[in-house]
Amino acid sequence: MATMIRTWLGLAALGAGIVHLAVAAGAPLVATLLLSLIGALEVAWGVTALAREQVPVPRIALAGAVLAVAGWVVVLLLGAGAMSHMAGMSSGAGIALPVLPMLGAAALDLACAASLAVVVRRGRPAVVRQPGVWPYLGGVVAGAAVVAGITSACLGATPVGALAMQSMDMGH
Image (tube, rainbow, N blue to C red; front, side, top):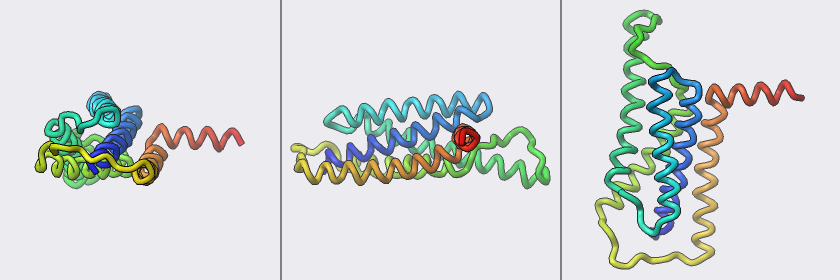
């Protein structure tokens, strides 16, 4: 089911990229630049994965997914260290990023990394089995539902998402 895995990878990368772009909209300048780059690369890779018959640049994508998660963990640790060291006063080393959206994007990136590790380990199959129409459609719907659920919850927890919810409440 290489086609199904490639499709799920594309959907997960799109979801993570959209979340990273949404978080970038409310982040400090350096974080905005990094998250915008990461998000744009994830969206571009996700679209490419959906459009191609093979997983595009799996080793580079694996490294990128792992680096995105590792970068967030470093930011988290720096923020926690600054908070505990200065009794709540930031030393400027920590960058405040919303935890829920970043956790959701990290989960999507880790799912991509795990799947890509399997793809890289197995290598290219001689013959790619194409799933039937109905199993493929069922798999796409299931994968899209999971990614949409995670992405929607994450987008609602970003500063931009909170602002959108406030403006909707004021409209009623």
